[in-house]
Image (cartoon, rainbow over all chains, first blue to last red; front, side, top):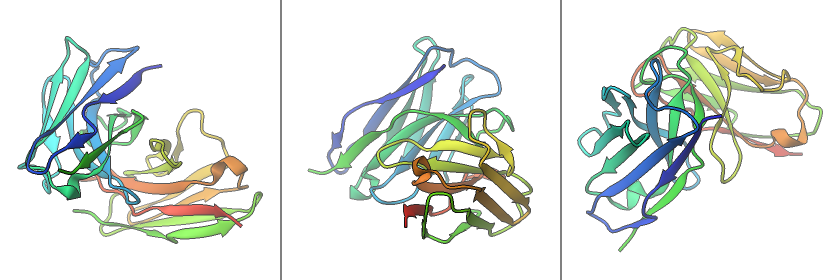
Length: 124
Length: 107
């Protein structure tokens, strides 16, 4: 069973850059029909899709964050990454990486595989 | 963006009860809807996709129905492990949006 694991700093200062990596194990990230995505969930709130990437590098982003978000992929390392610039306290959240189910073949689909999540706090 | 309105926002139910959660989309989304279960401190777990298709390994007491703008998640006989928060999510259009969640608590 494929496994996803987020990693990165748990504390980031305001105005700086949040950078997280998702490592895919027990399977290849270079699979056709699947997209790899980032989500976040502020404490006590709901889920927000940030963006998705295909193994060939095609990306789709949430327009609400598009100017600040970049998702990249490194197939040689079986990893994909999230960069969020100019962070504020409003970016404090649990960040999840996930995989689409492949049912629709689109960047946003049902998501059937998730990492455990990593808490990122924005504070000086 | 397509808005999803879930109701109720919370409910109390007993083990064995039949539970129904609704999700209404702000525009027609065909059957491009998924349901997730999330427990505290855990990632969401996919229960249903394509509005009514049960994800592999999910107990058959969970079912989904609907198309267009109105959708329902039903738990036919609530079990102790089902107390959690449930989210609907649409994947008809970008961004993929979620409902605000329904918290199912023990009565």
